[in-house]
Length: 168
Image (cartoon, rainbow, N blue to C red; front, side, top):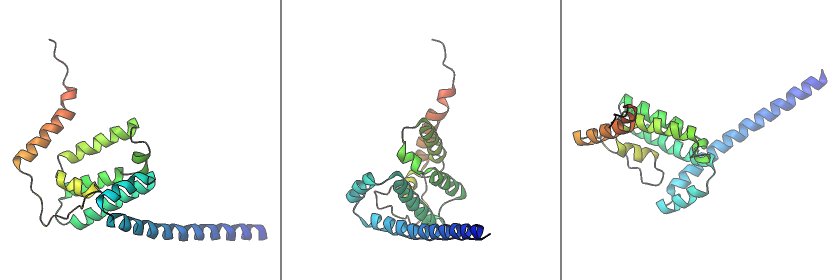
């Protein structure tokens, strides 16, 4: 009985210590993000290249999540959903194994989903940790030419491959 109580107390201590360390790491990482974003663009590029895959994923996710939160009122529900899907794709795996066929396939799916749903300026601002990522003051409107350009690109990448080759 004493052994069980001692073992249970030990595990409770380990779990409590791990939870405390995790909370401390979380606040440290958030502070690291803020310090990272305070650097000049060139310094961010250099620093990003030295980061672990986990740190890269956390940095990009945090940047995108903060950008989406700051712009939520001007984004439509379809845009917010597409952006959140893209944020969920940002994991350490895409930085650790960027040429993995599974990663590449999923990346293409996410890009195709976003291409016709979210303005490219918004995507660049939300996911690029190297630019200033300005927060537009009003909802960005696409011109008909912008919309046509992206729909044609989507069609060329998505549909044309499925059209059977015609005999010559």
